[in-house]
Image 1 (cartoon, rainbow, N blue to C red):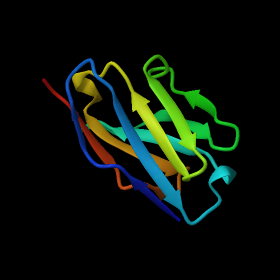
Image 2: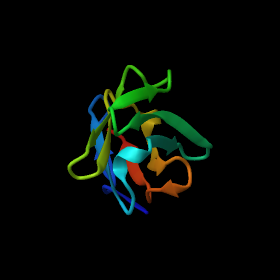
Image 3: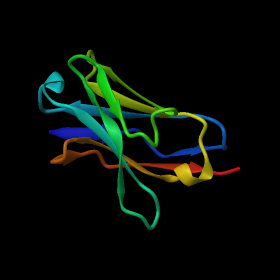
Image 4: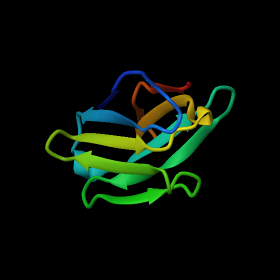
Length: 112
């Protein structure tokens, strides 16, 4: 099983970022993909999850107004898009096939 994420991103406040997570080695629709982030100096923060089979989503309350999870079952890839970025969104973002397999993480830096 592999989860490979897209590369680091630098964004200005108020803009959006979209991160990809390409999976392989298992049947994509058989398990959720969850998204978790780690802000510098803090613990892991669960953002939510998506079911690739029916595209059903569940978002953490903190993010539900700004985040969108999608999947492309033709490429076995999951995406997270975070809108209206703020400086405190600077973090490493991870996708996970809960919670045994993890992507390598994507650094998102929000700075003007």
